[in-house]
Image (tube, rainbow, N blue to C red; front, side, top):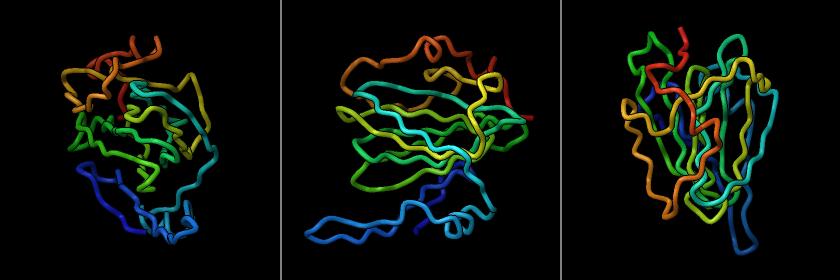
Length: 183
């Protein structure tokens, strides 16, 4: 596995070794020992999620606060998304900064988003199947969100070619200045 750091310390792009020929391909999508070595810590995942979304769907920016904070290991198995992490750790030197990357089924890259970061993605293909492993269970009472188009964050979302589609929850998310942050 090749590890690519992002502009946010701890948020990593993970590129697996892919073995392919005329029959197709094989890759190791998760290996606990290799993952722990890549992130420099032992991480325990407790839940796997799978979502399918259509072009223009934007999910996020979401996170969970302690004691249910979640790290996420995300990947796309069909389609293409622009994936974003935002630093929500008040004492961090990168508080309020974001990093984004394309994730595609054909490249097999994954993004590790540790606790303390909000996460969201925008679907750029006709549809996308998105998988994510989480380090804690979904806990609605601990859920936080930030408005996807907050001018203070100024996330450089690409144009999906269709209007952005949001849930009411994401449409009404608080601004970054009003959102709950990690202390």
